[in-house]
Image 1: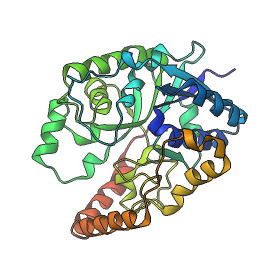
Image 2: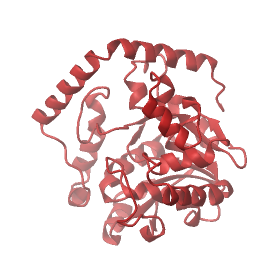
Image 3: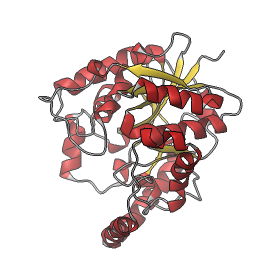
Image 4: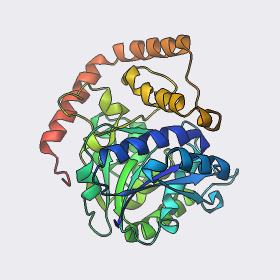
Length: 319
């Protein structure tokens, strides 16, 4: 019996990508270092039952969450975008994690596991700390808007701001950090432009352990063309370009294959999984738009690449 758990939190909209990431993780973790639990928000019991049957070989735990514990009311400001309100569910994870687990790795559903993650699964995060990868803000040219956002959260250095798509922590730590971040969000919704990520940065600014970007290789890193020199282990599709919708730069079209294969191999589940692959013309239009955008930003792209490579050389990562 292991005391390590990998947790996903998903609603129906992110159920398919979360399942793909969880399956990839289970295949990569051949030693079964950690168990995998998928915490569901407003996913019908019938759907969960059929998923458990279809994916029985993976022995996933499906644990329902009560959205009333974290979902903001219509009166609470919530910056609409590609992030669902269910993402706030990670902040109440400690209420639902079974008692046997002490070490938790949280992974967003819009990810794919593409390398060895054993070091992450085996890492013992120090008590009271949260391990995370820096967001790419520190690579950007300084701007008043970004500085104002970070200052509002009590941060003065962009490198201290982290992306919350992959996190590692002890359950005992999350019992205090999660509710504190949720309370911060409800008290300061307009400051939290990136919802729970903003709130977590505000409350964890002095208790973060830095992880190597390979464990949360988000879109801003992929744009730099450093994947060969620094191969990712978990890719994170931040922004609106998700491979189950748009197969455009910086992500390869081959990353859509796991979603298509899953649907092809599990036809009985197709009607239960909310995913719509965009038509070719729409993907082309999106690709042309991005090509034009980055043609005008090419010089800055090269500068960000240099900053990223220098960061790798000088950073002191947890492992």
